[in-house]
Image 1: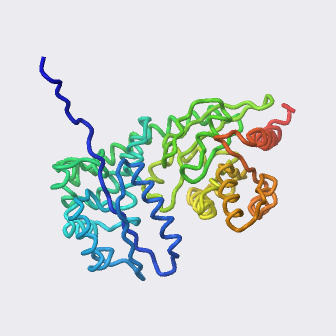
Image 2: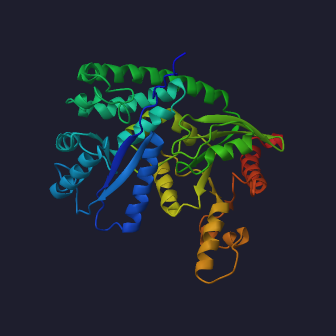
Image 3: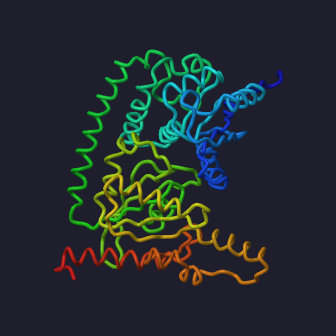
Length: 395
């Protein structure tokens, strides 16, 4: 018997450099936080970011987004390290993509395409896959002039999933036909969803909303005692999940919805209309916030702005600050570094401006099951009030 032969079957992880072009008004701290998020998106999509480039400009260059000097700097690094792609933290115009790709000779990915790619990875149901595909084709349509055709023959990876893999698919007529077919398919899904929601019309509905990766799915599992996929990745949940929950003989429907994010592609919001209907038609929104994140206040603002965009801003909201265990650890470390030996507590949090400005607000840790009973009680109180107002004979 000869020696066994072993072959490498795993595809090497793609490498990427990240590019940000902030305005002079944006602080360096904000820029770093935004690039951290872009790096997390890149990791979620399956690639590794190995370098960051930042250029502050009054406005991006019309032709190549960054200035010619910065582009030469990026090109030198990409060539030297054989980088697979360059990812921009903003949306690029079709001509900018073509010009930058011509200069760098690697795949160019903007923020919208990266997010679409992650949604393509995460979509499980037939409806979610159709919604993502629709958004991909709408993104692709104005970018059909040989987009990465020479690169797609050599490599797959980010930006190459679904639409756009072969040259024949880049024919405008075919893409428009596919968009029309998907539109019809989504209408059927919307009709099915409408019928399902009509059948559930007699029951109070609550929806979990929030920035991506704040722990909504973990909370959903705790409250509904179900197994909804939860992971420390951005957009772990793309499909809306609805579960029936009963507290103290008061039934209600709880839905876990797709997380929001800064600069969420408009086409994606439009495509996920039926999923977002779960938010629009809810009686109560449970807004989950990761209090341990340094930009949690910005995240609250992004979610509120998105709710406004989908006409759901006027709904009653229960604000839930999650991951207090991580926050308290961070705060304790800060106090120790400042020479204080005080250990912060949940009671301290209840006295902060966060609790007073957003009252009522709850502070929990879904992972460590801290204050979950308080969340149940407050949710029951809110749901029961709506239920008994709607059905006074059930009192």
